[in-house]
Image 1: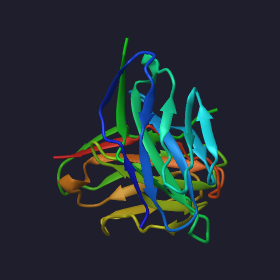
Image 2 (image 1 turned 180 degrees about the vertical axis):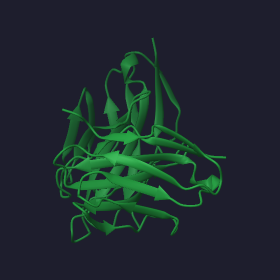
Image 3 (image 1 turned 135 degrees about the vertical axis):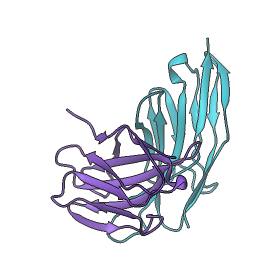
Image 4 (image 1 turned 120 degrees about the vertical axis):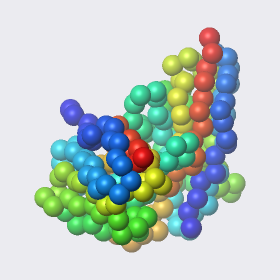
Length: 116
Length: 114
């Protein structure tokens, strides 16, 4: 079945440091890949997505590239801010299902804390 | 516009009680998903509706779990005879259509079974 393996946290960085959160996946079809973010006290929000191999998703200074050869979708940011402190979830939806049910399969989440 | 809303935000139940969790999706969204998120884990799929039709309920953990969306809008997740292992955050998400569109999540209902 589908699965997502995500870098375990928690991760603590100083402001302006570089960030990488690793994510690898297993899927039987042609998955779309996502990063969701959950800020303290808020619901899950889509951060970025990529729908096919070699696509790069980007938003708010974050980037992730869909690498089919390594089945990876690592999240990167060049300079993090205190406001980036949140829990980050890697997820996939597998379009193997003929009726297009794009249920999401999530990783376990990585808690990121940025200190000033 | 208004996002996905869920009620109640917090629910405490005694073991054996029945509970009902409500989800109000974004107006006009065809697809509705329920997920269960245990403490320290990622959300796990429970069930999926397209309008009023429940097309996938493969993630429901037992026959104590039941979901409905009778008019293709508001959905209710019901858990009968709650057990301690049912304690989790229950998330609802909606999207315009099932293929290729972003799922928008509600704030969740935190269920604690004592």
